[in-house]
Length: 589
Image 1: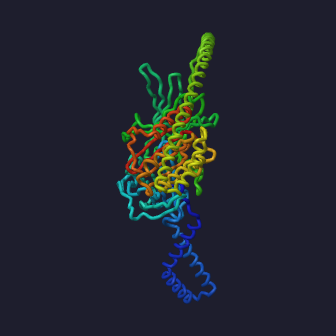
Image 2: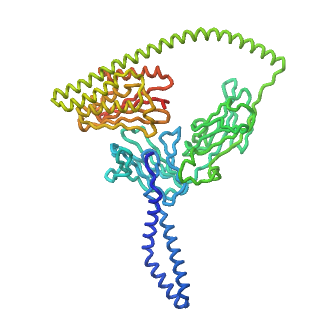
Image 3: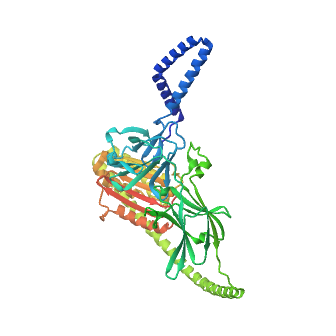
């Protein structure tokens, strides 16, 4: 839903004007009786015509202002907000400070919409042209109480919605809700992937300020470890760390939106953040209702010296990223919990003789160990360097060997396709195939270790256009708008075997009904490449005699040995409805 466009404010003004006119029309009988009454009163009181005009104009202004104010109540269906995942929402016409689509690193399928000034919200679910809306289910909770459970999408009422860059979207309304001081939660999932449940929260009340329930210091004992507790700490807490102490635990009060809060610790001496965490743990700490309370553990080592440190717990909402942001810093501060820690790091005291003796022993030991380590390191480095060079050469030879097998494998399949066209006496198609094949062959036979995404797209385009002449299927190659295709490189012939497999085994029976979709996507710092077809699928657990997937698996394993800082993760999903190949290049961007 990130590509939902927010309509221009022009449409908002048009809607308000229409509502104002509608209300004025509704009040015409009242205006008529009001004017009649005013004229009678003016006649009885002998009010002059000039004054009567002023009274009538003032009365009209008041009526128009009241109509315009009423026109701004209700939901504005001309402006949508991305509510996260497949959902979008429409809110009150005069709404401000709509904080929508907040996501959290520890809750990848949860979307939080904070709506502090709204009365009503209408929620819609969107589907792409190829999505199976009938496979989706949704549950709606109001203040954690179910009002709709595992409902089907009403496909009969689906209607065309916003056009995306590539296809027409369809939408269905899940409902309109009163949101003032309430929490509406919508859970959606696809029955084909029931483990992927998406949670959209629409939060209409004030966000509760987090409260620190307990501070616990862990220390070593003869039997293991133990804790000393400070319950319901005040605004400032004094903590002394001895050499036996190793950890500080912060326990927060439990809420339904714990995932919203993140914790940081600031060193007040340097005014720098020395600790941050968004991941709350549960277990070991019970609240008054005997429910597990959220907590985080902090290693003592972050406190480098004695002094003041500030614990800050606040909602993970980037307030200023919203266009209609008008909430003040004082208002934001109401959601922030601050607690001061006065840390004292207790050091053991030694006599000067003891210090001198220990220093001499440590210095001599370090010097001796350093010399031994230096000698062993030099010897080991020479051996490792030789082994590394040898291993690198072996891996490159193996990669070149696999590429040398992939190239003739691909060329053989392509020549078979040309032969098939000639045997069918489809000379024109064969000639077109040959012209595409000539350019494709030049690109494939180039001994380039890496090529750009733009070159990969061009190569796949040529190949798929060739195969279209034989099978008549449809295909698309899509990419994220923030990917620089010309400057991002990947290993050559990376996707070709998977695309070839999709054509050979997926499109042969589908022919003109076949569809192949290739996507280049950016997910954080990862590059995700997918090949999806609507063929008959195959058993991913079974070993096949074909070379394409076998060579690709071997190549992915070797690439993981070459690019040790970047993992190549290959996932294959197949069913009777089609096959999806997903190759993730981690930390590639």
